[in-house]
Length: 183
Length: 66
Image 1 (spheres, helix red, strand yellow):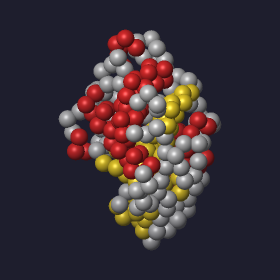
Image 2: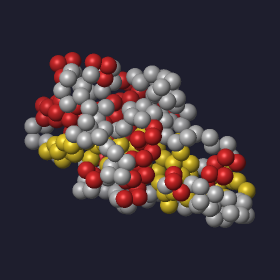
Image 3: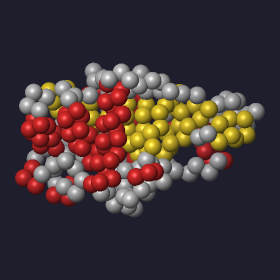
């Protein structure tokens, strides 16, 4: 399973997948853990300053020491975003910025046709979990709250971000177990 | 002569591009992602791809946060 971005969505999804028994993860993120990530991302105070990919690998190995984690410390750039995900069974999108999300989804769908992709849009806010739903279009699954405000206008809160992250992980599990259908 | 946009029936117009359709139905979000009959339309093509009659269209907007 490949995870693009291990901030609020990706780090929480990775933990859920590791606990569920997924044995191979590809983690792609260039960032380091900062204090203000701790309000929602699966990192700890003593990991501040570490690369997120190293910190998360360490945490995942505390859950399952035999988990195989491949990390790429790269910034995903338009034109080459699909490269780290060529060999994974499912791609899980955990990026933060709307522009990057749109570009990433477009590149995966166009360059890796048939590759299952799970993404999320509308992660900010809290208190309205009922608005989240899954949109499915072929092999593309979107965990979506179309009425959510952007993170520039609303807060990102652990409870809500973790909901979306686990929603993505839950869909990804169904796909990897071969239980998804086109419609 | 109609198309379906996010489950809603909309009149079809000959030679209408994705950009013009989005404007006509009031989808003004800058970061939309469009599928026409299950084909993903890259944003750079919104200006010249035209909508076929009876098309089933999904317009999704990307919202920052993660």
